[in-house]
Length: 224
Image: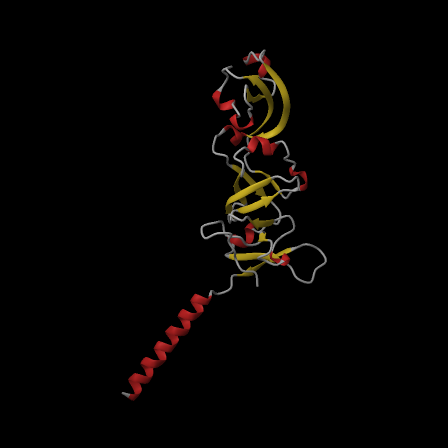
């Protein structure tokens, strides 16, 4: 039996396809969906490229993770993002190719494009949509650093929030039927199946107590 777990009281509920290493057995999760609990009881997702994110919410029905960067600098993490070997993709449909520039401090460009967490004393880091620089901006005091393709549009915000989704395993159908999802037993292939939710101990205890009260009332009726 695979029980739901959390890293902390109000943390996201962890169940299949996810599992918490050290708390839940291997068969409780799908390959690539391992999570861990930090010393501060944060729920940690580590992607194959050593990108580490704190998981703040898991929407199992929509199959979307809400995560943030422990260092509060997602643009730095994006340098190492390579989701080709990961079960996760960017959930935001609007994605842009961006050019990053190192500019002398004191220049004033769009505030929304300032990456303050990447800057160093004397220099600020800005990003602009690829191809727009020559048309709209005078960057004579800037040096191009690098380009990043297909960056989610939510990077423009200041909330340090990133949304990732997954399509396999496809457990959404199980949830729509009011069931849970798990790995199939006795198969050489990695396959999933739906199964009925087990009755909670609280529900069983309530039914048992109700039956006992009913029997006692019957006995009292017949023998009083």
